[in-house]
Image (cartoon, rainbow, N blue to C red; front, side):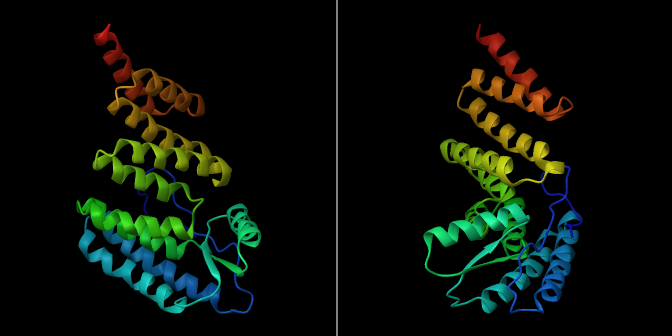
Length: 236
């Protein structure tokens, strides 16, 4: 299952249900309903009706928060089997409580609402939503990258750099083969942008070259590389 619009890169976000609580046989049907609501909200965002979309995301968020309020289990959301298994293994090693891995819907609801708020310029309200999404899916590339984008707009360069580096790490570990290079490229371009703002042009140049090694047709990386080299030339 996939969201019907793309937020940041040319590939869709896959919403999967890799691990279900076996005692909850209704879970797949419920998750499909939540996904439909998210798609409806996403459609509104894509058409520019951002404020109208937010109640759709709130509906999914409220449903999950009510359902799992007071749960003694550690709740995770994942978009791939590898990611879900990593969460379960980490939880088994670090926690006495059992863990359950849901589809990405709950975390995506936080993310989509945050994205909408960023589009409205409400960065302060978006940040804690992204942090909640990350708490549910600490290995998700997209949530980290969007948090980096928020820090960029706030000109908090070190926090932005940290977020993009974690996004790059997560993409390398958990992204599906079909989207891995695109997601790595997005995280790396975010990191390079920070280097430019910090005046670290040599570092930025190297990162953009790495992006082009991943994808020689990465137009954004190529254009930014040209800009960086122009700036370096002026300094000489």
